[in-house]
Image (tube, rainbow, N blue to C red; front, side, top):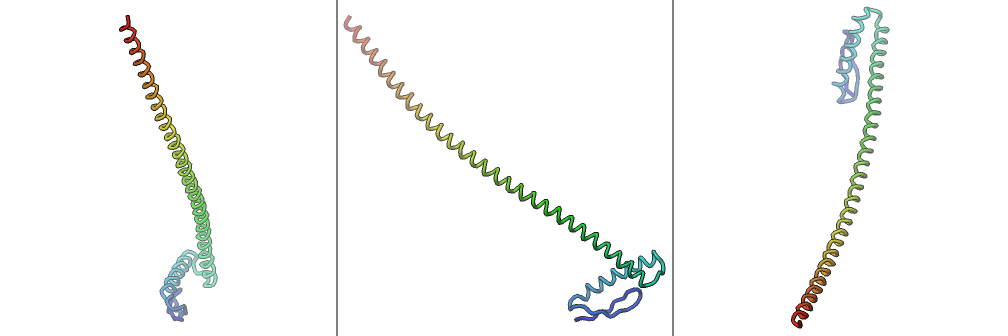
Length: 148
């Protein structure tokens, strides 16, 4: 335990605190003394005990206000975090859906390419057969023409 000399309401006090907490205790005492003197100036000399009580009530009121604000902010942060998780889930789902759609379209495109290739082969086969038929007709016509 460490001992610290502090000044409050123009009086010196020797207080004990955990080792390493000396500066913190001095700052807290200085803050409390400032609040106390502000109220003393505002309210006049209404008695040390009453002034200490009012100072304490004011500090507790500020503490509860801050605590309420922290709770509200934490609630808002939780809500934002929840919405962020929802958006993240939706984005992942959207990407998955789009990847699936792209995969289906690629599959359809491959089938379409295969159909085009098949049709091209059929067209070439038909063209070859037509050419052969025409060549036969021409040849037959030439043969008939030579006979006459």
